Length: 449
Ligand code: HEM
Image 1 (cartoon, rainbow, N blue to C red):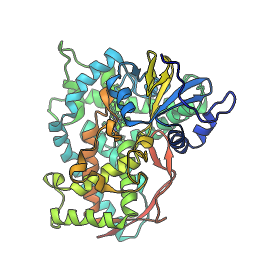
Image 2: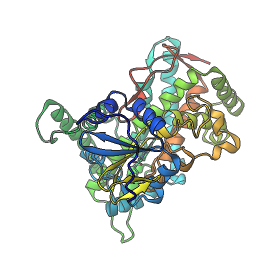
Image 3: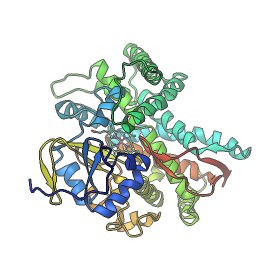
Image 4: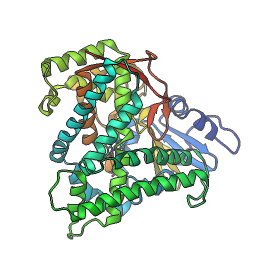
């Protein structure tokens, strides 16, 4: 190693930067990157972290030297409490096997089959939105989007089999996310088996999810029909040696997809609709594109590739509000990044939120300007260019195409019929929880177009 320490912001004794980070994670990380440069040294209590914000170095960590920067961190150990050995938190050979088995499930061809389910679900919600619009009933945008994406991921996983049990699972997830967030926030967490009230709630929520998944698996085992959902594909998946996923592995994958594929897309939709509601010119451009493509007819899947404005709006929204706003990696061997020492055993922090708003790489970085992703500029989609809302390298989001397809269908279906009006008429403040979401509810009113 070069024996060169990265610069560090002023720190408190013992706590280091823990309080500043906890108080305002987004503001603190952004200011640190701005003041300290591409690599900054941070201490959260006894733990050593480096915030790596420069796009080329982000690509080094996530892609080029991914074998030295592994995901076996405190966060991934917490996620394991919910997903078991799911793709979100396993590493090494176990991760490679799971990724190999799950990758074909998210192949473009498969996503096109699932797109029909997404479209049908969005069209169903449209009739509910119509009665809300006609009766001027206020809605909470964040919970509407959460409900929609949960229904979509549930149906894509299980077909329509969840039925009324969907509500049980849907209600269990906020409890699981709350415990994960509380654990992420505290330097030391109590073992989950200690029977505190919060842990009991968590265990009950896990038991509910497990119960529903087990029941669906049991029902499925007896059935012969070939179905186009993700569960069928997981049950059919074979390793190179012909081995199948065990029942526990199938459960872990299902819970992983429910966890990773629900609030992420819901937050992306919420932010996109908030941005459109506060940027009239862009909204009109999107509406004009929809009108010229659909000619007043219901949305069809073959219209989607023509909606280039909508695509750019979604990408720009994911630049400003990347719903996975932070990723951590444990350093397995001494390294240098940008000339600074990165010792083995420490943790590297990467934040799409910080890097995607760097003034050195983005003109007018805090402005909502979807034209950055139109025409030739549409190719700016790599970590080394400073854009990586779906991560990069081996752990890049496996559900990326699923999420983009789902978000475009949901937006096109809604915006072709309705206008969203924010009760507050301004963008809600962001809250950096497990996902990056509005700080509180987002009251809206819908009108028919
Ligand atoms: C807008 C929506 C989404 C965003 C912004 C998003 C973002 C991300 C990011 C940034 C990562 C990489 C994390 C890291 O490097 O540590 C990731 C990984 C992952 N995502 Fe997504 N995601 C979204 C939707 C989905 C959906 C719909 C699914 C599944 C149905 C999904 C499943 C996963 C899985 C399983 C991983 C782990 C992949 C691996 O390590 O092999 N995500 N996602």
